[in-house]
Image (cartoon, rainbow, N blue to C red; front, side, top):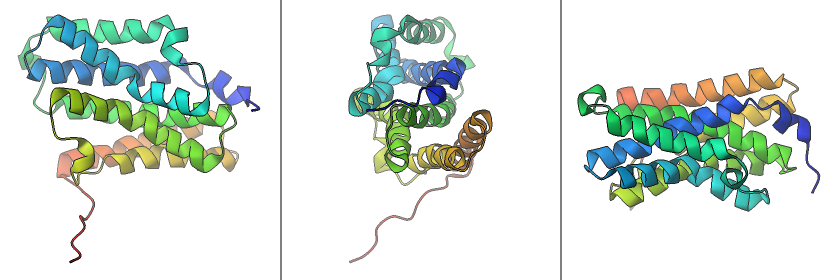
Amino acid sequence: MSIHAPILDQAPEWLDLAGIAVFAASGALAAARARQTLVTFAFFAVITGTGGGTLRDLLIGAPVFWMQDNPALAVCLVMAGLVWLTPSRWWRPRALDWFDAVGLAAYAVYGASKALAFGVPPLAAAMMGVVTGCCGGIIRDVLAGEPSILLRPEIYVTAAALAAGLFVVLTLLGASLPIAWGAGAAAGFALRALAIARGLGLPAYRRG
């Protein structure tokens, strides 16, 4: 499979690490809610921070990123330690949702970018962005015994799809990569932020 290296080579490393960091923080916050040990904080942070990217890499035939990149795991562990050391009053009740929203947008764009770089067709690349952005949070919810975001009408996957899809479309239209990254991440975050702030959701199935 041909790899379009320029897309991946130009991808800002901070975008990947930002997504990992905020997802790791959301995992640690889930452990904090359950009043778990430091080991559980670290485990939740690593699983949440790397879960979506791991599944993406396995699906597109790429080396699993955290096996090749020490900073990824280090960022997860640092975020777990920071949440562990800070008093609970610093974290507002919806802090997990906002950290998750930032990670969702950044990681969806990065996931789509990496998929394109590995020669994945555009539609599938956008789907890999959704997988990258959503699966870490889904795994976190399952481990924490919380209702999965997939089972709630609140907009979540749609925000990841907007971020990844807009990035792919702008890339195909010839937009510069920084513009495509920025527009995709901003749009995905804005939609998820509206969902959090106003409780926006998709209509549920009512036929019958």
